[in-house]
Image 1 (cartoon, rainbow, N blue to C red):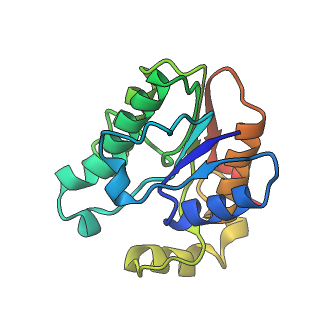
Image 2: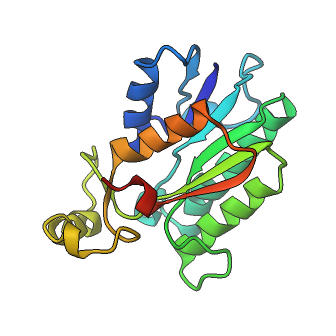
Length: 195
């Protein structure tokens, strides 16, 4: 099985790529860097499944428009191009409370990305909606660090829908879906992934 992993250097992407490489069910695993995420895409990209973990922050992106480019437009452009090449299975990491009509910019962008992907026509589209991601990040994010300091000790008191979820648990859910795709549109909510 050929896999195209978008966002392979991020928190979930790193865990996902490592797990894919140790699973004999997956053959070719493509992990393009930022420079390769602009069209035209290499002709040899013909994945059986796209696994998208792309994401940034407004601070890192520099503006809301740049954030939307990374979190919405790049995944959708690549998904469309790969669909035209025959790919029929897409798994994407979105976020809890994603809603195209949300007043919160982040949730609105994630909701718009989901809607755009739904319009492409994949035989199997899986939208993964984690809450706070737990794991070791290469970059320091103060808000996430503070949230983890509060959420981790109180995890059992927090409903599973909102509880922090490990990067490896999100990656494992994506791999299980890649191996056993469900026709149509499927949502994997946070509560399904927390340990």
